[in-house]
Length: 442
Image (cartoon, rainbow, N blue to C red; front, side, top):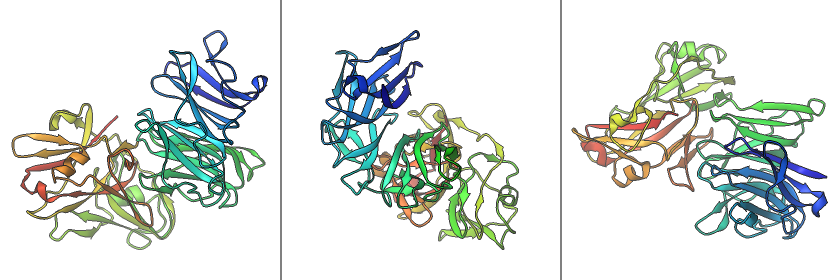
């Protein structure tokens, strides 16, 4: 008999299953399907003691990892991986590395191969905690604050989008045991949509994110006869009486503000809802109220406000792109190029940049293109910052405050669909003939 089953499929299409193996002392076991039958991966019952809440993930190289509540190590979290050379399972970092008992362990691996684990943290009032493995120090480190949920978190489920941003879903004891989802913005954990958004109590939660960056959540729905429900998050949601930094994530057709937003928001433009753009070239820089007939421009953000809630459902065609090589070597494929304001000598300039694609892009993937009048040179955000051309940070608005992110692993930012962010040109760019932000397409 087996329970706490967890399924994963490698890049070659081979299914693997992890489970608590009752026939082997309730320790962890993993099997895979070889095309004809199921076979053991390493030894059966390979964990040191009883394993609970087994969670399986496979990295891009095909190595299986398993996380579990480790009965042999104070019921704390442990992670192991399969070593195909020795045909055995080995510890990843220290066994039992969490602060206290770890329940509902959930494992995910980002595109760079870094394992992350989410769990109900018995060392922090049974709130949600997330840790990741630091291969340099061979140790597990906290992602944000330990115990960051509002109250007790059960049925934790972890997923990472293509931009490297971790999301966690859980039964939220701080919100009537309904489901909540949060994401790590590079600095702290922030709510994704409303806290406790399910109709009733939610348990047996499972979170997944599609290639376009949209989170989906499945759960047993206490508000609907304990049946299964699935929900997804709409990035274009505008709460009532709230300012939203937004931008089109496709070529809008028709492109005028009234046509695109008028059917999504109640009332009339200028009365119940309104939009402002940022003039990066004015002296001094300033906001400009948009007219209903003004056009939404790809790469440009705007502030949108409505007295009633709405969901922005843009219509249009695919975002046009150009070869990244048009702006020098170092970035292949297609890009969308956003003009950044060149500041007067000794000054800086803010740019309200709109993300032009309907999928997330990591800030470490973008490039700054600087033109000196004869040659384009590409920089990473950190490189552009060091050259005093463009600040490495991007600033996003979460509805109540700004979040600061950059292109480094610990505070990595992600451009999200229908999102606008602030990017600042620095004084060193004043002598340039051209300055652009290159956002790569998939």
